[in-house]
Length: 416
Image (cartoon, rainbow, N blue to C red; front, side):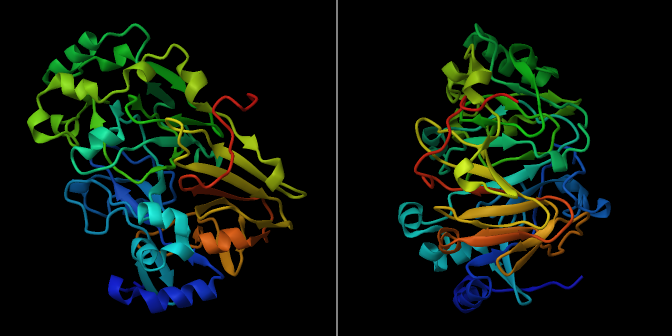
């Protein structure tokens, strides 16, 4: 397949200007694939079977696709651009990160660019055959100790990418109320004894298609095997707390990957990274579970816009996401108060001048028509979306911090 020419950061301005003009403020993005050496691909993210190990078997299978990302994947042996999204235009491509640096006010809005100097969030599909090891993501203070940022995140389980459950469609969250730090410390002490028994201290929740969860940093979780759409903060910090998953060893290095070197054997420090009160919350599900909520102010005849990720983390609106469904033959004008990363998950149509087409199978390196970056400029002006197919056109889009004047809070939905 043809490979587009890469434009370096110092030459982005001219081609970016042409791309913005041609796309009416919309930028076409190419698929960004990320492997994980400690997991097995779930085989539902439309990547061609012959390309599951396109990075080499030693890197592990590809089980993630990242969307509108300016965040690098923190993998050992990574490629220089791993995790970074590319804009494609007229046979050329350039990093979305470079585009934001070049024209931040147009792409993400002046307020966001002035505060962060980058697009500070990203989203992904992660898709595994079985569960991910029980782990946590550091909060902002602990991540800062190793020059990183904290990582709050969220989950949504799109029905279109979950035709099968795979091996374990349950996620462990937090710790059983009453668990002590001494019990957890014992699990870390037993790391080299095989299964360190940490799941005995946790609780699993059955995953439900079309719903989600909000997960602040410092909370232990072992995501189950549904393909997951994951809006999150622009960081890739984590610490594994489970030593064995599905018979596969998890090295201690993945427990202390983002811990200061002098603290690599300090079990009290490692446990201290956890938000203990949230982990042993007696009403954990009530405080983190998300059902979709229709945004009646953004819905109309033939189209429905739903909140799928909402709520705040420590009182801050860090990210959010919506699902737009447009019925066959219908069109609507999508007008948002800020930029977003869009991925089409069902049907075909158009967004402004750009074609939308949900792929059935994607070759590694192939350019698709399902992903768009909706710039701040386009979002605030309004973008027309039309369903030109025979089935519903469905797209997911996620937003950066403080985009909305108001949004629902966890617990606002009426259970379906």
